[in-house]
Image (cartoon, rainbow, N blue to C red; front, side):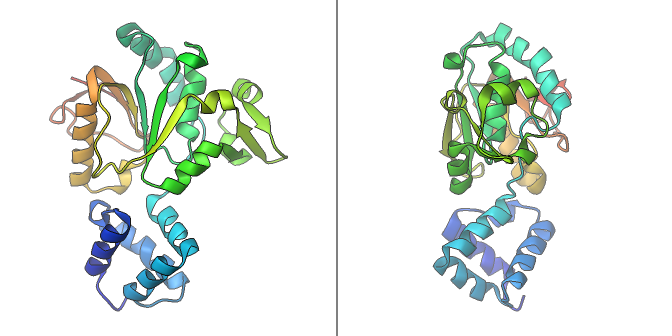
Length: 259
């Protein structure tokens, strides 16, 4: 690009509220430069003008930088651990009125998976999940609850039969009964106020894109948002390197407990 990426980051922050300084720069800049080149621009300034005047281009950019990749019951072994160990622990420790937050929930696959699994322990009318994401458009998709069959590849058959309506050969819609258990809200992990008194926070396969400084800030905020002995569930490619310094201790693989 012929102009300044630092200036571009400042403009994007003022325009979208997203601080690109908190993302790993080499990886993010490469993605953005490829997108700009695809549209035939050779300057950041020209591309910014397009973002401000072309909603489709803006939506594409937001999709690109927020990296919305999700599926139901992603990494099934971890969901088995959630069922056999974590939910029983939470029920015994905090009882049935669980406060669960699915952070950076993307298109809703994760919070809906939580509802379906938790329905083995509680009736649906007792389940409430808070689900948040920075991208307002994916939250709108999540609220509608339409999914391509590819998103359902790890979904246990019992849930497909019980909680989904088949729209056509490749599209399914999740039931209103499950949708009613989830409250979707827009939330920026780097600047917005966090919920409090959570029993379980689920934030998976998101922080790998952030700088170490941004990750530590988010983990510190997650710790403050949890009740004592509450749990944080992270992704299969994530590990909290300085867990003790951040107020956590290992509970199980990919689960950290507030000390």
